[in-house]
Image (cartoon, rainbow, N blue to C red):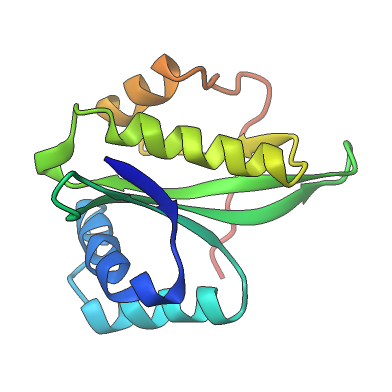
Length: 147
């Protein structure tokens, strides 16, 4: 298995995985919108995406990081917004390798933290994060304002 930082040349492969990721969260399939969304992120340098490929060079997963900052720490952080592993590749270490690639990258650009959230009932993802050293935040509550 290989993990590489994706480029715009990988967009069609990532868009397919991204569309499946959105379906996992209950959204209707929309490959064209998925591709357009990712295209905007690439051309505007708004995210960093890592792509996992298996031994046959088939894409089996991805993770997408969005840059952010901590005002209190006055330092760079990243939001690990998306992590998806194809069902056929789950429990093979792909998710852990994508998390590792994200952490290595974030450290390399001087970030102090990666942050993520997942659905409360996504027990598989929660187990993956915990087993890879992630800690659940017990100090802060998250609020959203729909616009």
